[in-house]
Structures are given as structure tokens and as C-alpha cells.
Image (cartoon, rainbow, N blue to C red; front, top):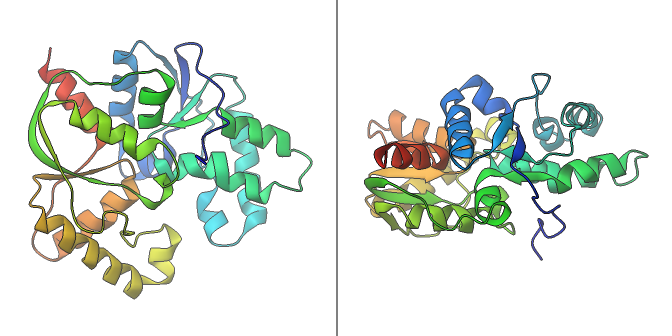
Length: 254
């Protein structure tokens, strides 16, 4: 069963953007691209300025007390009933699945569950929330799509593949062991760097064998990990978040 099966249906075009820690620290252009894409679709995008994190780093580290504090802050910050759209499969999955595990016996479980039910990963929101099945413009490149671990059992990766595959000039290529983890895993890459690097090397080998121009994903952590490893090897690999691809294709249709 899809983890997103109890999602609250989208009834309007007002949304709240959760930009995520990685957008804030490293990938601000991904947040900008997400806003442009959503506005192109007629959405009114709000950005609650008090937002911080989804709580996943503390959750993954086993510090559920700290994670619960962060999630409760997110509940207060995104208190509007409008959908919360996240340009990250990892952060979205934390809110509509991971957070439920740690709040299972807490008195405010209902509030956390309500936030999870109105949280959408960006690609999932575009395709399954708004019903968009194709994307305008051109993007003349060979693209490999990395399906991150956190988008398993959700509709996100299939939604992104559908959008990318509909763009003129974009050739989507498969690569070996596509479901294999890239090795990042957030705090996993810090706690187990040697294992993380070995896993990343395996993934990079399969990606390179497909000879893409660009590696695309819906998770910035994976792109940062694989792109950084490729650069250290002296053979840089161009990486893009799929929101950036959608924006570039959209601009070329203007």
C-alpha cells in the first residue's frame, strides 16, 4: 500500500512551501525552481518564515526527544490547512510516515497525522495532486533519474519519471540496480563514511555506464553525495533536481 494513500485531496491552488534544510544551506536554487514551477501551474505559494526542519536528522540519529520538538514546531509553523509541498522525497516521507512512528503514543498524534496527510513531495503533488500529466518545453539532454530510498512505496518517483519523459528532447535512460541506495542516508554517511562511500561508488558505476548528460533526482542529499564523489574522483557528473529541469524546459517553451 502506498504511504500516501490517506492523503487529503487537493481542492485549491494555495500551497505552503517547505524549503528543507538542504535548500536553505546548499541548494537555494531548487527552492526557487520549485516556486517558479508551482506558480506556472497557477499556485499561490506561501513561505512560512518560521520553518526550520522536518526533524529527520534527529530521528535518524535516534534522538526522538529532539526530533519530536522539531516536528511540533513544524506543526505550528504549517498550521494552515493548505497543502505543504516539499521538493524532497526524504523530508516529505518524514512528515507523512516517519513522524507518525515517534508520535504514535503522544497526545498530539492527531495534529502530526493531519500535517502528514496534507504534506506532498513536489512531483507527487504536480501529478497526483493537481492532475498534470505532461510538461511543456524542451530539454535536449540524456537524463538518468535516481529514485531515492525515501520515495520507495510512494508515488513520487513514478510521477517525476512521467513528467521528465513528457518533455521534448529529453531522453530518459535506465541504469543498473536503480533501486540501490546511493549511500548518503543523511546521518548514515557521517556515522559510516567508508560504507557510504563504497555504496556511492557502486551507484556511480551504474550511472556512468548509462552515459547520461545529467543525473536527476528529487532528493538533494543524494545529488550532493554522488556529485561530490564524482568531483573527488576527477570526473565531475552534472546533477540537477527535477524542479530545475522542469523550470529550464518551461523557459525554453516561452
